[in-house]
Image (cartoon, rainbow, N blue to C red; front, side, top):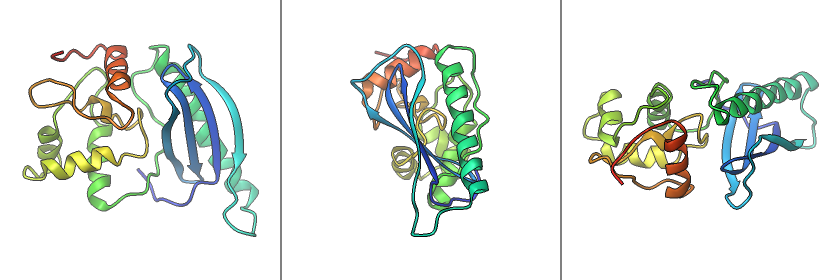
Length: 183
């Protein structure tokens, strides 16, 4: 994960889990959020792409192009993921968060496709075994869904736990990846 700056580009993309909002700066993808769980499609299509104005001064064209490049690469990789032809994302990420949140998100990013873990597993991975609740909070604050796979974190007993976009979407993503858990 790289340095955070404000997003410069935005795209809305349909996906099997709903309408996805992607935002990027010249440094990488800053946000991937589900906007509308009711809109579902079997394909990933770009609906709209717009530059996000930051002030009265327009961002440099090169900065906009670089931000757009991050969005374009994300759209391609998401389509591959939903088609089950991609198991690992390699887009550049630039989420805004505290040092602790960044540590948690980095640990989540290292969790392989098809694997699950618990909050305590992540706490142990980052060397803070007593920070289980804080790991849960950082997991819930993840601004880059799917790519930073917070959906792979389940309860210690193997049961589904909370997910910002609902347990139905979490279950769908786990099923896509072939992850089994106690139901």
